[in-house]
Length: 393
Image (cartoon, rainbow, N blue to C red; front, top):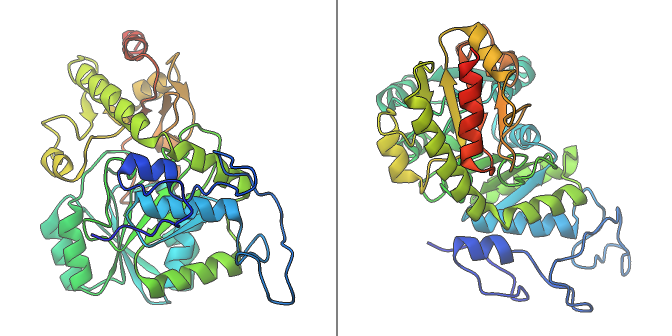
């Protein structure tokens, strides 16, 4: 496997994942020798004659040194050749879909994905003539049948999925999709490249909401695409420039900072989430726990094969929707808020929050489900919090 190029001026010939996260794209200023590369806020750049750009930089929308550093870092940690940083995860998804699809084309989408992805395809691109078809990506035979019946142009899966933590076999789905000529896209937001590398398993494109684990501190909104195909990369690059949904330099700088601690954070998120999942699985007031690290999870074996740990999100089902809402509104340490993947623990009620846009569709989340993003607090405090909340139901 050929790793992405790291500029000769980078401080280390880094190759391990933690080393790549810390050093890829991090070129020191030759004048100051700063350990942390500068934050470049300029919107435009001096030209040494008309069309003669210093370092290839012309205007902030087409390029910025801080964003370029992040894109090289993203490519390195996902083992890809090209990376693109956007202002949000949905902006990244939109650029990719418009680069690949034309009116009349179809996306084969997982039955449990982020509600915003379904909304983008069905309500924004749908009127443009893009079709969407839903299939359970946890059932490889069902995926094969769906592709054989009508080959799609894009095969799109999340694994682990949001919010029910379903697992898809990336290697198997990628083989089916690519054999049919489809572009296979994996949303790797929940796992992050610290735990799972879809391009190595055969996917064509990886998409991220960098707002989540990559940023890791709930202080930045962003998205990213990582891929290997040169021709598709040029199409994405053009749309990034022509449409302009770029990440700003400060957002890019914050994301780069977050990525440097990604591996150690993901290990702790995963350890605490597994402890919490096992604790909740034994609680009499919890009907079901959704977490691939549990041995009775239907996707456990696949997850163990393609992930190095199981991530920091745990979802639970309670006996009624009313109790699920009451739980989400009663925790003390888990903060009721949208999003996930930060150092602080968050609780959400998907039916009325992150997935409200898919109510009444095939992707609707059961109203008894609560999603927990397990942060980096002391695990005993998190266990006490869920226990006191459940005791009050």
